[in-house]
Image (cartoon, rainbow, N blue to C red; front, side, top):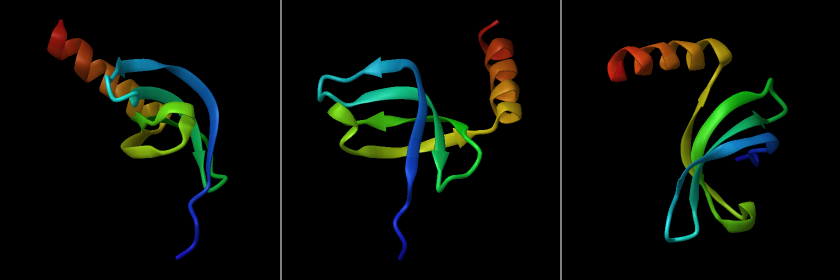
Length: 73
């Protein structure tokens, strides 16, 4: 199995700081040299490791933002 390449283009912000040192963050990430996408996942200190997460295109992120705005009013 080939190795997965992850390039962090931009660290946008921390969604939640965890006591373990891992933080749930929103980043702009390119996976395997593909077009960068918005990415939400847990990251270990010093970016040593990352947990499972979700990636969103700009269109998907805008749709999610609309859904959240409608839900939370």
